[in-house]
Image 1 (cartoon, helix red, strand yellow):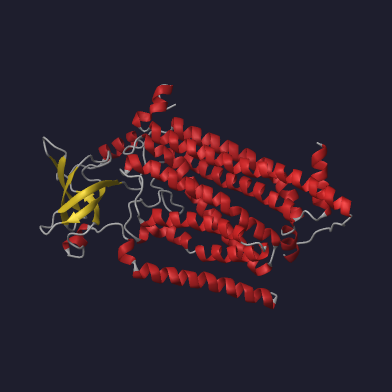
Image 2: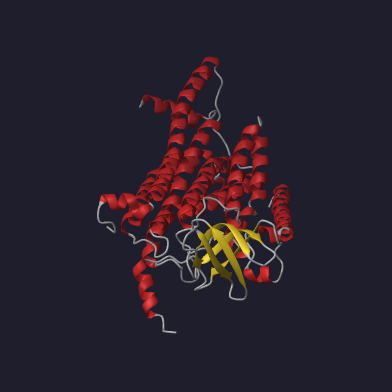
Length: 67
Length: 144
Length: 248
């Protein structure tokens, strides 16, 4: 490791606040870009299940799908 | 290719080319304004307006930095090695500011040809290296 | 050729393929990002002029590079959807916008944080920084335009045209530091000649660049798969998939 101890790593000779802020914002943004679609997927599953229940009740037929 | 799709492809190409042309014309019309700063040779040639907010950029001439002993006043010369512009400034300079380094100063040119800067920014180049490598390069440089 | 094209554009086929691909991409993303960031933060020596603030390069450059590449993906997908009316291309175009906007935001914010200790300012209206801000507004514009339409087919077409028009900004960003005087320095990585960044500092940067590209792919696939399920809700395969999901 380039730094001698954890304090030096944290301080980065005075640039610590800049470097750690940049990495912190990046981590938060990247996590959000995964969390948003994963949460949407769960909500969507719930909504679609409800949708198919209603569909069953009205007995509409589904297609095979095309492009 | 299907004629309809060929027609749509032509429309897409037309959109891209029209947008490209529009931006190229815009860039051409604004070519002076898109430049962030005037190089010293342009200022020496009288291209920069006097008494208006502008920026100048170049290298800090070696040996030109003069600091006042009792205040934050500092003066230096910005050069592009073709022309020089003397700059005065009062305030704290960025860490990377030093002789032989790039700099961009914002402020106004007075009628004496002195640039009164209200802001000094350090401009660094695209070279990145560890300090040891820089030292080694410095040592390896031939004398003179 | 056309059979292959046809198969690729099938949402069902794409859903299955992306499902198989995702775990591998996720592993690649995690490995390259963790290794590259740890290397860049802990082991690389500081820059001879900038000191430790230069370590921001390991997120700033990849975020900016992928923000631009992501725009090209969005514009090309938009063109394909305009010409061939392929649903999948429209979905890919729509899903690029939020990811691209977030990555452009990251490039701007990390650049501002880096600019303060090195240049002495958070922000300057030079050609590079301003054109990247325009890129951010283009992404946000596509995002907003899509939501502004009730008719999603019209929305897709309008967004594709906006994406194509905005594509001229990409070469402007790329060459802005060559064409005009700017505060931002030219590129340090060269594909043809020698890079002006020392090899010991370049290696972790290559890792994080790969990591950001791979991350973009992971996030894009997650978004597109949701979009497929939503739009193909009236097909049997989606219903079977969703109902099988609920039993787990």
